[in-house]
Every structure is written in C-alpha cells, then in structure tokens.
Image (cartoon, rainbow, N blue to C red; front, side, top):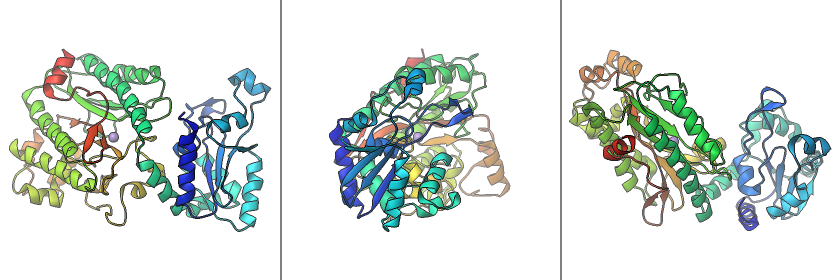
Length: 461
Ligand SMILES: [Mn+2]
C-alpha cells in the first residue's frame, strides 16, 4: 500500500467535502463460486482501498465527520484462520499502517450505526454493486434490501468522485506499472497470432502474464477474431489468415490500479490492403483524439472529433458519402462506431462506475446524449489535469446492424450499403491507449505498445 499519510490526507479531504454525519465504507466479502468454501478471487472494494488501503475480506471503514474520528471494524484471525489461511497482523496493527487509531470487532459496527441512527445522524454510503453488501447495509440500517439504493448519499458520491478523478503522481506510477505488464501481454499476443492457433491459447497466455506480474486481469480478456462484437468473451475460434484479431485486455497491479489497452492485428502478421485501409482510419482517429486532449475540453467534443475522422476516412474508401459534418451530427457514423471514445481509468478499469456512470462522466453542464452511439459515451464532461482516461475508437462491421439499418433505409444519404455488404466478413478494429491529462496537454502513459502498421508487422515477424 501507499504511505499512511496518503490515506490520512484522503480521509481528511473527504471530511471537508462532506458536511456532517458518518461515512460508511463496507469492504468486500469473499463471494462463493460454486460452493461456500470455493470463492472467486477476492477483490477489495475500490472506495475502501482508496480511503483505507487494506486488502482483505470482512472489514469496514467508518469516518465520523462530526467527531473527526476514523474507525476500522474487523476481526482478528483465530487459530482456525491461522491453520487454513495463515497469520495476519492484528486489526489494530493493520489499521495503524493506514493511519487509523480506532478499531473494533465487526459485530460492534451494528451498535455503532444503530446509536448513530438513534441520534438522528446522517449515514452516508455509496450504491452497493454486490448483493452481499446490499444485504449488509439493509441489516445495518434496518431497511428493506430492495430499498437500500434509495438511501445512498449523492453528497458522498460526488465527494468521492471529485477526489478519485484526480490522480496523484504515485497513482499514475501504479497505472504505468499496469501498462508495463499490458505491454508484455499484448506483444505476446501479437507474436502468437498465427493461423491454426485457438483464441483461448492466446487469451490464457495473456491472463497468465497478468497473474505472473502480481495482479489479476482488470476485466475478462476480450480476444476475438469477431471483433465486431464489442465485448466478446468467447475464445473458442481458430485463427485463420485474412481475419483481424482484436485483443482488449489489461491488468491490475498489486495495489489494484488498472491498465486497459486494445490492439488489433492481422492473423499471420501481414495486413492486406483492405485491412490496412480501415486500420489507418482507426489509428488516425486514435491519434487525433489523443492530440486534442487538454484541460478544459469536453471529452464529448473529442469523441465527436474522432467520429469525424472515422466518417471522413470511411468516405475516402467509399463506405460513407455526402456531407460528413452533417452525417456525424445526425449519428450516421455510429453504424460503424457504435460506442464511446473512452472512460476514466484508475482503481477500476471503468473508474468509479460503481458510483454511477453519469456522476462520473457527466455534470450539470454536459448531460448524456440520447443519440445512438454517442449515448454510450461514458465520459463527456470537461477534462481536468490529473484525469487518466482511455482513448479507444473503433470501426466495426456488424452484419445484423447493417441489415437492420439498410432495411429501414436509415441514412441512405450517408451510408453506401452496397459497399458495406462487402465488409460483412471483416470483423472489427479498435485501438486503445491510456492517457493522462497534464497541465496543458496530455501524456500517453507507459512504454509505447506497437501501434502503427509497420510496428505491428515488425513485432509479428
Ligand atoms: Mn476501455
């Protein structure tokens, strides 16, 4: 974990940003995989990690704003735990490492919260995303399980997002560590992408590299020759010449900071002309978007800029036609680019999304668009120094979507459906980097991962 002052300062800032009451951060519990003693890999809650740093199950953190006191609730290990799981420092000792003086057994948290409720004090908590925590909160607060989400604190959610959005140097350094591992994952995948190999062989190798480096993957590896399915987790296809392989994968560091990188490569290592034509458009959209990053610019503008680069490029190769400014404003490009340009990145791969996508990505000034395509943009608001975000444009040929829009005669003035028909066997291309917003521009984080046609072909040789 970081030095204890990091956690003390974060909690103190929160006490300034939330007016009064008690802030409750339940840590995560182990979750059963197929029977109680066989659990999923433990993942601590990111808010708990951010403010309390401790990385094991069955803890809770409380910040008493009114009395300026921080607490960790948890149980010391007993002999059974020591025999089966090994020894751990006492809760008191662990708490001291993150600058918390007050500790108590987990069960006493119920009395603590009950007393606070009786005294009419406000209990702030964020929206639970796991059933176990939702039930724990219902129990603690004496409310119905289904009613818990109605009591979440918007004040706390906004205060947490305000802090976690701005990455410190030590956090950026962690993210760069995660990208260093992603470099190994992706260059290994490129070298393995030969005809006759199954997707799962490469996906498994990538996940193994993440685990070897000390953390899990930051989300299940997306690796597919059917890249037109955006979040494709099926890994059973055999790679064959003429297909593009999309690999969208990252990892977590030991401190649980994430990377999220996408590369798309031609199976066998050589782009054919059609693949190169589409690839160069996506690459240009990725680079132009990155170059536009600086504080004060709404990310939605950069999303639309990348959409424009894609539309112009598709017009050049005959897939779109007409006035591209109009096409983009009406959303015609979204048949080929039906998702957002990117999202924040940090302790979560879609950072803070558990707190609510619109709280993270939008604000009073910039509201989420309802237009197909742009509506899926997770981050639209103005950028600030210290944000870390992904830039991930793509072009996809989704046969069912082409069929539907064609049948509806949708945007026939902008889309050349005859030509689109001939691309139904193409798949998709996405290129994603992780970028820091600096004082006056941007920094692409981590060691550069092969990205141009020449770099990729050279790596795959
Ligand atoms: Mn991403």
